Amino acid sequence: MTAATVTSTHHGPQTGIEYASRDEITALQTERAKSTLRHAYYNVEHYRREFDKLGVHPDDFRDLSDLSKFPFTEKEDLRREYPFGMFAVPSDKLVRIHASSGTTGRPTVVGYTRNDIEIWSDLVARSLRYGGVRAGDKVQVTFGYGLFTGGLGAHYGVEKLGAIAIPTSGGQTERQLQVMRDFQPDAILGTPSYMLNVLDRMRAEGQDPRDCSLRVGIMGSEPWSEGMRRDLEQGFGIDATDIYGLSEVLGPGVAQESVETKDGLTFWEDHFYPEIVNPETGEPVPDGEYGELVISSLTKEAFPVIRYRTHDLTRLLPGSACSMRRIERISARNDDMIILRGVNCFPSQFEELIVKDPTLRPRYQCVLSKKGRMDHLTLVVEQAPGFAQADADISANRLRKAIKDNIGVSVDVEIRDYVDSGEGKAKRIVDNRPRA
Ligand code: DLL
Image (cartoon, rainbow, N blue to C red; front, top):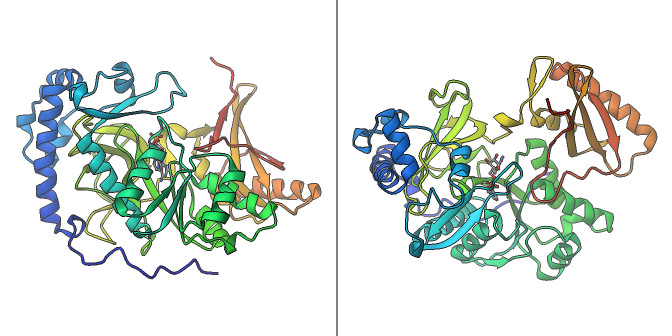
């Protein structure tokens, strides 16, 4: 089975900045990084203090390699300045405030000027175009609307593209299905785990999801695998591409996969500068090598970020759909790493094995506990519909063995009828270890 073919191309006339020569892109980045460093230094106390501490000044920046002399910014720095301490403009220049969920401690709060919103909308519009959405398409936006950047960020981009936003927001799957039936959207935006929910619900109601009106799906905000893409593309009969972003840096629309190449996400280098660093030493590594993505904003007014540590693991690849570089699909965060008897593993590695088994659904959680003094992992996985309880033991054994053979760790596997991995972003790790 193949996914729907896309007849229009995002290449169009190749006149946009995305097709400029590498020299032009580098020159633009250099000029913009310089002015962002000055803007941050002269308008945000935190940056001035941290630059001074390291003895660096924006005037020391001559070319992009000088950026590594400047300090990193951590989520903790933003938390310490809660709520508005990192804003670089007076409040009369702000038009919007978002915040990331404060699951661990204080949320981080971000602000936007009118110009920031314009650029954000342009980048989301560009992302949607790369993902195969066209002007005039009806686009169902199932990212949550609210303090989360997903819903409103996507929404403004849909409108900017000249497409039609259907702001269903997250949850209320029954209503989402009704809207899909009655409004006949061409595209859907949401988290891949939620899209899988929608797919299952349609099937449970006796509908064939392949009969739906959708042509493309743009999904992100959480890690997902190639296997999950295949399930979603074949399930709905769509092309599904990956969208990346984070609230501290912008929101959705920092990088987007091209529907024509489906080979990783083009990083919008005219507005953000990517570096990959060794997560332990903080040293930049060359393109092509894996490490942690660090992002500096190049045009943001209200909330410039200098060398923000995303904790997302990936690598930089040369441009393919255009001249801007790509990042490989982000399959893990370094703070999601589970260490079992010395073996480092990530939820995405389990997912790769789960999606290969037709008796299982890629809805799962990694539950950590203690067995004696050792950390222990129970992988709780949902059984695919149509399989009996008796099949569950066979599936569990098979998965346990596949994990041992491929990843080299021993885990328990529990197969259940239903696994609730949370609304919005899937929660993959449940840590039940007693606090030390
Ligand atoms: O999730 C922004 C967003 C909304 C992106 C809608 C894409 C679509 P935060 O809530 O701040 O912002 O979470 C950012 O989510 O550092 C990654 O760890 C993860 N993430 C986002 N997109 C992807 C993706 C939004 N495509 C954090 N693949 C990031 C893997 C992703 N992880």
